[in-house]
Length: 226
Ligand code: ADP
Ligand code: ADP
Image (cartoon, rainbow, N blue to C red; front, side):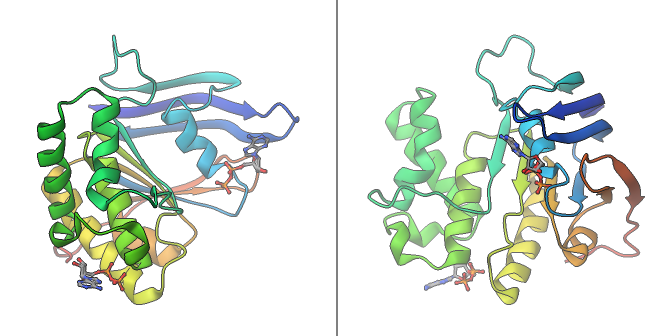
Protein backbone atom coordinates (compact mmCIF):
# COMPACT_ATOMS: atom_id res chain seq x y z
CA UNK A 1 0.00 0.00 0.00
CA UNK A 2 1.20 3.44 -0.90
CA UNK A 3 1.29 6.36 1.54
CA UNK A 4 2.43 8.96 -0.96
CA UNK A 5 2.75 9.14 -4.70
CA UNK A 6 4.05 11.96 -6.87
CA UNK A 7 3.74 11.51 -10.63
CA UNK A 8 5.37 13.86 -13.11
CA UNK A 9 5.32 16.65 -10.56
CA UNK A 10 6.87 20.01 -11.33
CA UNK A 11 6.87 23.19 -9.29
CA UNK A 12 7.63 26.63 -10.62
CA UNK A 13 7.23 29.42 -8.08
CA UNK A 14 5.55 32.74 -8.89
CA UNK A 15 8.97 34.41 -9.26
CA UNK A 16 9.79 32.00 -12.11
CA UNK A 17 12.14 29.72 -10.13
CA UNK A 18 11.72 26.17 -11.37
CA UNK A 19 12.25 24.29 -8.13
CA UNK A 20 11.27 20.77 -9.01
CA UNK A 21 10.94 18.12 -11.56
CA UNK A 22 9.57 16.39 -13.30
CA UNK A 23 9.66 14.34 -10.14
CA UNK A 24 8.28 10.84 -9.48
CA UNK A 25 8.25 9.25 -6.05
CA UNK A 26 6.23 6.58 -4.33
CA UNK A 27 6.49 5.87 -0.62
CA UNK A 28 4.98 2.76 0.91
CA UNK A 29 3.04 2.87 4.17
CA UNK A 30 5.33 2.51 7.14
CA UNK A 31 8.46 3.22 5.14
CA UNK A 32 11.21 5.52 6.49
CA UNK A 33 12.84 7.35 3.60
CA UNK A 34 15.39 10.16 3.45
CA UNK A 35 15.54 12.88 0.84
CA UNK A 36 19.13 13.92 0.31
CA UNK A 37 20.34 16.65 -2.01
CA UNK A 38 22.13 19.98 -2.38
CA UNK A 39 20.73 23.18 -0.91
CA UNK A 40 17.90 24.63 -2.97
CA UNK A 41 17.23 21.43 -4.95
CA UNK A 42 13.58 21.33 -3.92
CA UNK A 43 13.54 19.02 -0.89
CA UNK A 44 11.34 21.31 1.21
CA UNK A 45 9.18 21.86 -1.82
CA UNK A 46 8.51 18.10 -2.00
CA UNK A 47 7.44 18.09 1.66
CA UNK A 48 5.18 21.13 1.21
CA UNK A 49 3.53 19.52 -1.81
CA UNK A 50 2.85 16.34 0.18
CA UNK A 51 1.42 18.39 3.06
CA UNK A 52 -0.72 20.37 0.62
CA UNK A 53 0.84 23.59 1.83
CA UNK A 54 1.67 24.20 -1.83
CA UNK A 55 0.15 23.03 -5.11
CA UNK A 56 2.12 21.45 -7.97
CA UNK A 57 2.47 23.38 -11.24
CA UNK A 58 1.84 20.12 -13.08
CA UNK A 59 1.55 16.44 -12.25
CA UNK A 60 -0.31 14.61 -9.51
CA UNK A 61 0.34 14.41 -5.77
CA UNK A 62 -1.56 11.68 -3.95
CA UNK A 63 -1.61 11.04 -0.23
CA UNK A 64 -3.40 7.96 1.11
CA UNK A 65 -6.49 8.07 3.32
CA UNK A 66 -7.55 11.60 2.89
CA UNK A 67 -10.80 11.22 1.00
CA UNK A 68 -13.41 13.47 2.47
CA UNK A 69 -11.00 15.26 4.73
CA UNK A 70 -11.50 18.99 4.47
CA UNK A 71 -8.53 20.31 6.40
CA UNK A 72 -5.31 20.48 4.40
CA UNK A 73 -2.49 18.63 6.09
CA UNK A 74 -4.78 16.36 8.06
CA UNK A 75 -3.10 13.06 8.80
CA UNK A 76 0.31 14.65 8.43
CA UNK A 77 2.76 15.78 11.10
CA UNK A 78 5.40 18.33 10.16
CA UNK A 79 8.67 18.97 12.02
CA UNK A 80 10.88 21.88 10.98
CA UNK A 81 14.45 22.73 11.88
CA UNK A 82 13.15 25.61 14.01
CA UNK A 83 10.99 24.21 16.81
CA UNK A 84 8.81 27.41 16.74
CA UNK A 85 7.38 26.88 20.22
CA UNK A 86 5.21 29.54 21.84
CA UNK A 87 7.48 30.95 24.55
CA UNK A 88 4.76 32.20 26.88
CA UNK A 89 2.99 28.89 27.43
CA UNK A 90 4.10 25.64 28.99
CA UNK A 91 5.50 22.69 27.10
CA UNK A 92 2.22 20.82 27.66
CA UNK A 93 0.22 23.76 26.28
CA UNK A 94 2.44 23.88 23.19
CA UNK A 95 1.90 20.19 22.50
CA UNK A 96 -1.81 20.38 23.25
CA UNK A 97 -2.43 23.26 20.82
CA UNK A 98 -3.09 21.22 17.64
CA UNK A 99 -5.69 19.19 19.53
CA UNK A 100 -7.35 22.30 20.94
CA UNK A 101 -7.52 23.76 17.42
CA UNK A 102 -9.14 20.49 16.28
CA UNK A 103 -11.78 20.83 19.00
CA UNK A 104 -10.60 17.96 21.22
CA UNK A 105 -11.96 18.45 24.78
CA UNK A 106 -9.49 19.98 27.21
CA UNK A 107 -9.01 17.00 29.53
CA UNK A 108 -8.55 14.51 26.70
CA UNK A 109 -6.14 16.89 24.96
CA UNK A 110 -4.13 17.17 28.17
CA UNK A 111 -3.85 13.39 28.51
CA UNK A 112 -2.80 12.97 24.90
CA UNK A 113 -0.26 15.79 25.16
CA UNK A 114 1.29 14.19 28.23
CA UNK A 115 1.44 10.81 26.47
CA UNK A 116 3.13 12.39 23.46
CA UNK A 117 5.65 14.09 25.76
CA UNK A 118 6.35 10.78 27.48
CA UNK A 119 6.97 9.13 24.11
CA UNK A 120 9.80 11.60 23.40
CA UNK A 121 11.32 11.27 26.88
CA UNK A 122 9.95 14.51 28.32
CA UNK A 123 7.34 13.23 30.77
CA UNK A 124 8.85 15.36 33.54
CA UNK A 125 8.89 18.59 31.54
CA UNK A 126 5.21 19.19 30.77
CA UNK A 127 5.05 22.19 33.10
CA UNK A 128 8.36 23.70 31.99
CA UNK A 129 8.57 26.65 29.62
CA UNK A 130 10.36 26.41 26.27
CA UNK A 131 13.12 28.86 27.36
CA UNK A 132 14.12 26.43 30.11
CA UNK A 133 14.87 23.67 27.61
CA UNK A 134 17.99 22.82 25.61
CA UNK A 135 17.90 22.76 21.81
CA UNK A 136 17.52 18.99 21.76
CA UNK A 137 14.66 19.10 24.23
CA UNK A 138 12.88 21.82 22.24
CA UNK A 139 13.16 19.57 19.21
CA UNK A 140 11.63 16.74 21.24
CA UNK A 141 8.71 19.02 22.11
CA UNK A 142 8.31 19.88 18.45
CA UNK A 143 8.25 16.15 17.64
CA UNK A 144 5.66 15.51 20.36
CA UNK A 145 3.51 18.31 18.93
CA UNK A 146 3.70 16.71 15.49
CA UNK A 147 2.81 13.27 16.88
CA UNK A 148 -0.03 14.33 19.18
CA UNK A 149 -2.63 14.32 16.41
CA UNK A 150 -1.58 10.74 15.54
CA UNK A 151 -0.67 11.46 11.92
CA UNK A 152 -0.08 8.62 9.45
CA UNK A 153 2.80 10.46 7.85
CA UNK A 154 5.60 12.37 9.53
CA UNK A 155 7.42 14.94 7.40
CA UNK A 156 10.72 16.15 8.85
CA UNK A 157 12.62 19.03 7.25
CA UNK A 158 16.25 18.96 8.42
CA UNK A 159 14.99 18.69 11.98
CA UNK A 160 18.31 18.07 13.73
CA UNK A 161 20.64 20.16 11.57
CA UNK A 162 21.12 22.91 14.16
CA UNK A 163 21.91 20.56 17.05
CA UNK A 164 25.31 19.49 18.31
CA UNK A 165 26.52 16.09 17.19
CA UNK A 166 25.85 14.13 20.39
CA UNK A 167 22.34 15.52 20.80
CA UNK A 168 21.70 14.81 17.15
CA UNK A 169 22.85 11.21 17.52
CA UNK A 170 20.60 10.68 20.57
CA UNK A 171 17.66 12.10 18.68
CA UNK A 172 18.42 9.86 15.71
CA UNK A 173 18.28 6.80 17.95
CA UNK A 174 15.11 7.90 19.71
CA UNK A 175 13.44 8.71 16.39
CA UNK A 176 14.31 5.23 15.12
CA UNK A 177 12.84 3.65 18.25
CA UNK A 178 9.69 5.74 17.85
CA UNK A 179 9.38 4.79 14.20
CA UNK A 180 9.69 1.09 15.08
CA UNK A 181 7.04 1.30 17.78
CA UNK A 182 4.60 3.62 16.00
CA UNK A 183 4.96 2.25 12.47
CA UNK A 184 4.46 5.61 10.77
CA UNK A 185 5.58 6.64 7.33
CA UNK A 186 8.50 9.03 7.73
CA UNK A 187 9.95 11.30 5.04
CA UNK A 188 13.12 12.85 6.38
CA UNK A 189 14.97 15.67 4.62
CA UNK A 190 18.65 15.98 5.44
CA UNK A 191 22.01 17.22 4.17
CA UNK A 192 23.79 14.48 6.04
CA UNK A 193 24.71 11.29 4.21
CA UNK A 194 25.45 9.63 7.54
CA UNK A 195 22.04 10.54 8.96
CA UNK A 196 20.19 9.39 5.86
CA UNK A 197 21.90 5.99 5.79
CA UNK A 198 21.71 5.51 9.55
CA UNK A 199 18.03 6.32 9.84
CA UNK A 200 16.22 5.22 6.76
CA UNK A 201 15.42 2.13 4.76
CA UNK A 202 15.75 4.07 1.56
CA UNK A 203 17.73 7.12 0.49
CA UNK A 204 16.40 9.17 -2.39
CA UNK A 205 19.14 11.41 -3.78
CA UNK A 206 18.08 14.50 -5.70
CA UNK A 207 19.89 16.47 -8.40
CA UNK A 208 20.55 20.20 -8.16
CA UNK A 209 17.61 22.46 -8.99
CA UNK A 210 15.23 21.72 -10.56
CA UNK A 211 15.26 18.65 -8.34
CA UNK A 212 14.86 15.28 -9.98
CA UNK A 213 15.64 11.80 -8.74
CA UNK A 214 19.33 11.04 -9.15
CA UNK A 215 19.39 7.78 -7.21
CA UNK A 216 17.00 5.71 -5.14
CA UNK A 217 19.00 3.47 -2.85
CA UNK A 218 17.68 0.71 -0.63
CA UNK A 219 19.57 0.39 2.65
CA UNK A 220 19.81 -3.19 3.85
CA UNK A 221 20.25 -3.51 7.59
CA UNK A 222 22.44 -6.57 8.20
CA UNK A 223 21.16 -6.83 11.74
CA UNK A 224 18.60 -4.80 13.66
CA UNK A 225 19.94 -1.38 14.52
CA UNK A 226 19.59 0.50 17.79
P1 ADP B 1 15.72 22.71 -0.44
O1 ADP B 1 14.75 22.34 0.62
O2 ADP B 1 16.25 21.54 -1.19
O3 ADP B 1 16.83 23.58 0.06
P2 ADP B 1 13.52 24.33 -1.46
O4 ADP B 1 12.45 23.38 -1.81
O5 ADP B 1 13.40 25.07 -0.18
O6 ADP B 1 14.94 23.58 -1.53
O7 ADP B 1 13.69 25.40 -2.61
C1 ADP B 1 13.91 25.07 -3.97
C2 ADP B 1 14.12 26.34 -4.78
O8 ADP B 1 12.91 27.07 -4.82
C3 ADP B 1 15.15 27.28 -4.16
O9 ADP B 1 15.86 27.88 -5.20
C4 ADP B 1 14.32 28.29 -3.40
O10 ADP B 1 14.99 29.53 -3.34
C5 ADP B 1 13.07 28.36 -4.25
N1 ADP B 1 11.87 28.66 -3.46
C6 ADP B 1 11.44 27.96 -2.40
N2 ADP B 1 10.27 28.47 -1.93
C7 ADP B 1 9.98 29.52 -2.73
C8 ADP B 1 8.91 30.46 -2.79
N3 ADP B 1 7.90 30.40 -1.91
N4 ADP B 1 8.93 31.39 -3.74
C9 ADP B 1 9.93 31.43 -4.62
N5 ADP B 1 10.98 30.59 -4.65
C10 ADP B 1 11.01 29.63 -3.72
P1 ADP C 1 20.22 17.67 25.30
O1 ADP C 1 19.80 18.05 26.70
O2 ADP C 1 21.72 17.69 25.14
O3 ADP C 1 19.50 18.44 24.26
P2 ADP C 1 18.59 15.40 24.60
O4 ADP C 1 17.59 16.32 24.10
O5 ADP C 1 19.08 14.30 23.73
O6 ADP C 1 19.86 16.11 25.15
O7 ADP C 1 18.01 14.77 25.94
C1 ADP C 1 18.26 13.45 26.33
C2 ADP C 1 17.37 13.11 27.52
O8 ADP C 1 17.93 13.68 28.69
C3 ADP C 1 15.98 13.67 27.38
O9 ADP C 1 15.05 12.63 27.11
C4 ADP C 1 15.64 14.33 28.70
O10 ADP C 1 14.67 13.58 29.39
C5 ADP C 1 16.93 14.31 29.47
N1 ADP C 1 17.37 15.67 29.74
C6 ADP C 1 17.95 16.50 28.87
N2 ADP C 1 18.24 17.68 29.46
C7 ADP C 1 17.83 17.55 30.75
C8 ADP C 1 17.85 18.43 31.87
N3 ADP C 1 18.32 19.66 31.82
N4 ADP C 1 17.36 17.96 33.03
C9 ADP C 1 16.89 16.73 33.11
N5 ADP C 1 16.83 15.85 32.09
C10 ADP C 1 17.30 16.26 30.92
